[in-house]
Image 1 (tube, rainbow, N blue to C red):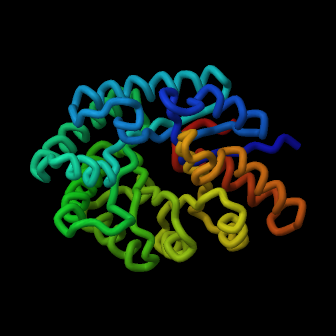
Image 2 (image 1 turned 120 degrees about the vertical axis):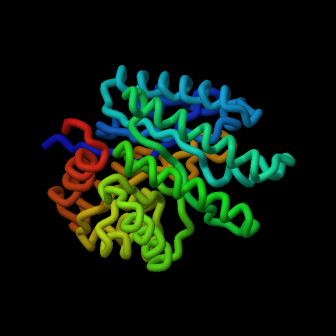
Length: 285
C-alpha cells in the first residue's frame, strides 16, 4: 500500500534556507504528496523595508517556490499574510501604529487581488500575538484579523490563523467573530494548536493543525477528530535547524504510531489525504 503524507503549514526560504526545491524533494522521499507553503515576513527574505513593493516581491518569491514544488510532482497551496509579529517588528523600528495599519490594509488588498486572480490560495498567517506585547499592538493585530475575516467572507478565502493558545477562550473568541461576520467556517484553519486549543477547535467544528512533534501527534491523533491536520511549521532557517520540526517528521512519527498500533492506516489516510483535500480544495493524489 502506498503511504502518503501531507504538511499543512510549512515555510520555505530560498534566500537563507533550503528553499522549496530541497524541502519538497526530501519530503517526497518520505511519501510526501502535498505541502501548504506559507510565507515568512518579507524581512526574512532580505526585503527589510516595510514597503508595499516589498510585499509584491515577496509574492513573486513565493510564486516561484510554489512552481518548484509542482515541478517536483507535489501538490501545494500558497498562503501569504501579514503576521502579527510584523506589527511588533515595525513598531520597534519606530514606525507608528497608524502607518503599520495603513501598510497592513494595503497588503491585504494586494493579497485579495492575487487570490482573485488565482495566483495564491489563501491568506496567512494573520491573527494575534501569542507572546506578551503592548495592549495597543494587540488591538492593532485584532483590527487586521477582523479585516481579514471580512475578506474571507466576501471572497471565500481560506485563512491560516496565528493565535494565542488559550483553549476555550481562544476558540470562543474566534467563533464569535465567525458567527457575527458570517465567515464560512470551512475557511478557517487555526495553526500550530496546543492540545486544549485543538480540543475546543474540534468542539466548534473548526479546522486546526497540530505540530508534527511525536508527543503532540500521539496525544491528539487517538481522539480521531474530524477537523484535524498536521503541520511541520518548518521555518527554513539554518540558524534554527528543525524549528519547529521538519516536514518528513510527519511521515516518520505517523509510521511509528502505525507500527505500535496507536493509530490505524485509515485514520492516517483521512488526516493526510481526505482532510487536506477538503480544506485546501485540491485534487486527491
